[in-house]
Image (cartoon, rainbow, N blue to C red; front, side, top):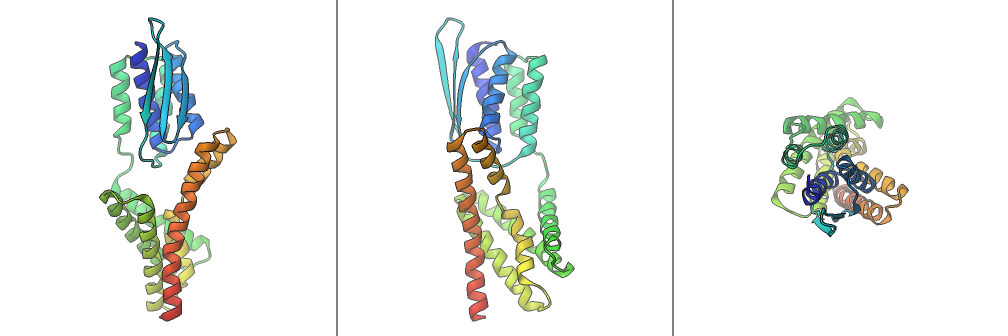
Length: 251
């Protein structure tokens, strides 16, 4: 494989990892492994907003490619698939076309169906409501609220609104529906319902990844991830807090 093609394969590999929530050190390590699989070296620098790769071509000239990264999500399955792909290259290097086809398949893979995600969002709320000593009725209410919030959040995300707006609206929905449930059924605990329903909005993976980036010395990326997680938590908390302030004071 020519160096320019190898750089493109490495960029594609790093893009998939970074867009799906991988740590910066993992992206750099994987790109380096891809080059090593073909007996070549590179210099790679990764930020959450971009990937920079420099390598030496066959004629002795250096080539540098930059990939701007927009949009981040968390899909551990795709990270696992890319890690497996990079390790398989060590024992069985692929040609350019085969490698890009494999990466394209990983990038567009559908790991879980929408129905499965909906059911898991409800199950998560149900389990956490019980975990925090809520009753079975609190858990059932949290289940249905969480499913509804997940559906609305997904719809808002597809319309193109900025990320924090969808979390703020989701927080308002959690607070409103929990308040209505507690008003309609006084034996329910509004706070237990909120705890269960809000769990699908908690940025736990972002916080964990940010801490891991800091431990590996990637301070800029770590601060970005942790700041993003804090803003998400503030957006959700603000939405829930506004509804509780209004509801408990005036209703």
